[in-house]
Every structure is written in C-alpha cells, then in structure tokens.
Amino acid sequence: MTSNRLQSIAAKYPQLQIAVVGDYCLDRYLEINPARAETSIETGLPVHNVERVRPQPGAAGTVLNNLVDLGVGRIYPVGFCGDDGEGYELKRALKASSGVDLTYFVQSAERNTFTYTKPLVMAPGRPPQELSRIDTKNWTSTPEHLSKQLASSLAELLDQCDAVIVMDQVDLENTGTVTTHVLETLRAYGQGNLVIADSRRGLGNYPPCLFKMNSAELGRLFNHADPMDESRTRSFTLQLAEQNRYPAVVTMAEQGLMGANPDGTLFSTPALPLRGPIDIVGAGDSVTANLAAALAADASLEDALSLAALASSVVIHQLGTSGSASISEMEALLGYLKPQR
Figure 1 (cartoon, rainbow, N blue to C red):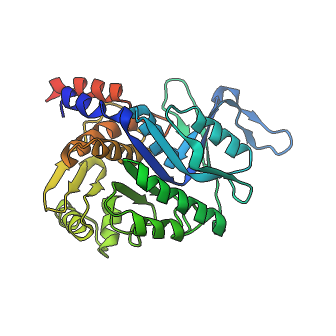
Figure 2: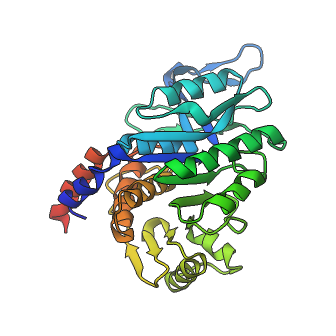
C-alpha cells in the first residue's frame, strides 16, 4: 500500500453511504486515580475514586466510530438502546459523530441499554489497568414489533447504501438487533449487495455474504476441533469464499489477515510490527470498517486487506479505549514504516 493509493481510495469515502446493523453498546470508561484511594468507613472495602468518565459508542458503535474517522459521508446505525440514562449517553455520543443519521436507531423502554462499564486505574507513567468490567445486557428476546421494525429498516437501507455491515455482539440468540427477522430479511433482499457479517456466536446460520471472522471461528464453522494452522486456514478460507460466492476474510492475530475471492484468488497480509504497549480491544472492528469502506469505494480485496492491517495496527497502540483509525493516522504509519522496509 502506498500513500497515493491510500489517498485515491479514501477520496471516495465522503460519497459513500454505509449502514451498520448491530448491537450498539455504551462503553463507559471510569478513570480512577490510585493516589486518591480510600477505605470505606461503612464496609471496610477499598474505594476507587473516579476523576473522569469517558462514554463512547462500543460494539457495533466501535465499527461506526471507525467509519466516522475514515470520513464516510453518511452512516446509518440500525439498532436500539434503552430509555435510560445509558441510552441518553449513547444517543448523545452517536449524535455528536460526523455523518451519523439516527433515523433507524430506536430507543425503547422495553430494553436495557447494552453497557460495558470499564474501570481503569490511571497510574502516572503506566498503561491503564482495567479492573473487573461491569456489564448490562438483555437476557430476554427482543420484542417482536421491535425485531420487525429493525428488519424493515435493513430492507430499506439495502436499497440505498453502498455497503451494509451486520454485527452481532450478544451472547444469547435473538436478544439483540440481529434477530431471526433481520436474518430472514438479509436472506431475502441481500443478494447482490456488499454485506459484511461478523458474529461472536458464529455465522453458520447467516445467508451468503462476505463473512469476516477469526481463525478459531473459521475452524468451528467447518467443525474442525484442532488448533488452526496457516495451511488449514488457507484451505477453509478458500472453501468458504467458493461456497458463499462472496469474498471471505479471516483475522489471524499476530499472523495478520487472509482473504479469498470466489474465483480462488487468495491474499495474505502480514501484521505490522509492534511499536510499544498494545491493547487489542477494537482491532477486529477496525478491520470490519475498513473492509466495508474500501470495498464500497471499489478497491480490490488485496488493497482492502492492506488498509485493514494498517488501521488495526493504529488501533492496538491506542491504550485504554476501543480505538479507531483515521486516514491521517494510517498515512503517518505508512510514512513510519517506509524506511523500515
């Protein structure tokens, strides 16, 4: 990837419309000053004094954050939050993001706002230390009327968007945005569109589209119980692209990225060198966002993988946040790497 090629692809981003259908989370970071530690008089337990609270969109919202930083012209979040304080914070953060249209984002008193509360000990001269996370999730099925509303939004956006990202982040099936109704709509109307799917529970029940997953998820998809080596990953990635008749992309942590086209062409992009302490949270989401934007801008799969590798390298060096990568940050990284090669 060269700077000129990066700029050529990115020049098309302001004209793009991309929908992100998925589970929007509030990432609430609580920055704790250890110098202000106390002991509770009532309980005798340690008290963590928070000096700063950082709320930002997480989960599918992290993908959206990356699209915003890439300069995508119009971004449509499709999902929901609760009619609660966390929902207020999440909607406020989404509204503040450039290019985001909340027409299809629903606030419902029948749902909790999916929230990750992340206490961080901020000791001077040290990377942030995350303490035990506190989660708020939904453990009941998404109401039928809400599920159908989300499916209807997807059908509408498939007609008008250059790309659609479907991201399932919940632990229990049908408790989030990507319900059976949404998948049925994707199956009925998604063919011929650029749709990128990613799910923490696996993509075995998804209709054919561009599947993005890690190598362990790929192994499970093919009922392969043993650890995945590079040869097996290559074979399964090619099979997946051929079966779906769409490209397939696999992340392999420190081994980089692999992608295959349905015609049997395979590309492997190595991970970039580490440049200090890392935090891998959000790296996969940066890959998803960059794949969607680059492919929607008519980049080749090989170029899209290169951009995704650049972005994820930027993100993992952002500590104490599920980060994002801008074009200027990716270009700066290219400039840094050039003399290293």
